[in-house]
Length: 148
Length: 148
DNA sequence: TATTGTTATACTCTATAACTATA
DNA sequence: TATAGTTATAGAGTATAACAATA
Image 1 (tube, rainbow over the protein chains, first blue to last red):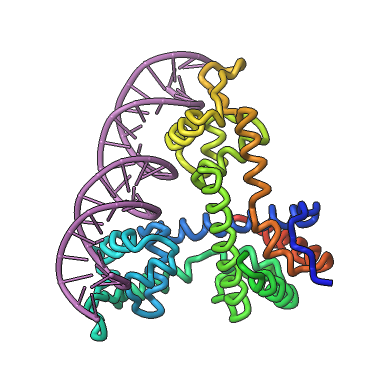
Image 2 (cartoon, helix red, strand yellow):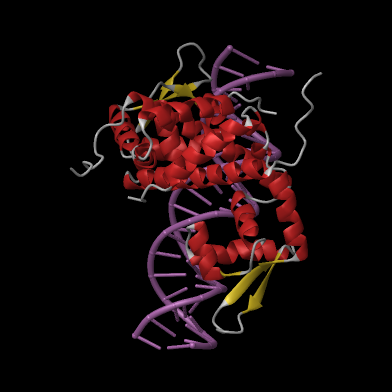
């Protein structure tokens, strides 16, 4: 028999776990925003800069990754560009495309940002290696669930 | 000897777990925002309404819980009030205070909102009872870590 | 004097629609 | 025609500072 569609009301344990995840999410966000603020960045700017610290991306692609409209990306990149953290380059293959890329300074800031994320150290500090392995496995399985 | 302050660079496994948590956070947020949008609410409005569905709160207290300035709460409550989901009541004990409270309709919307949070069902659907118990334990221990 | 809530202001993020330059 | 990026616009969230009412 196939698994029935999951339309039942979640049980007590599930709700409890969902609430805990909500707490983790809140904690993660606070840490992320305050780490960004320490570098005079907004959350959106920090996320975009972090993406670009890995590789240059077309504006369109950035919008997809940030899950926002392309018109928003223009403004965020504008602000980062005016601070010298990001630059726009032409795409040799398609003259319509502009590639946004982190400058050297931008990569430096992105690196500092990553390292100042307290969340990376503190909440996990109470877990031993075995527990982190277990947590990793559980999170991986959760993320492997279909979108809908 | 006391445990040394945790200033070391996080190891590979920790970074991996942090990244997974980042993915979970992103997924949770998408779901939360889209559940809110289905009820024509913004994320901030949904969070505030959810708080008030439990108990009436002074504007000041709401700002603390939402971790924003009190002046912002005025606007969010204004918008919810204009839709009949929230109302302001005087506090008999202190005439400076205004208590924000969910209306009956507001509580109904908050309940729907909670139940339409897909995150409560799907990502956890792949985990059995034992795994959920393990996850709960791990998350609880993470949240028990000090703030700083 | 201190506190509560509000107003005024300015900035950022957001979506939508219209525009341009390329393809 | 279709696509990439931009501009214009309007609404919402945010912090800061100043204010009225109350403690």
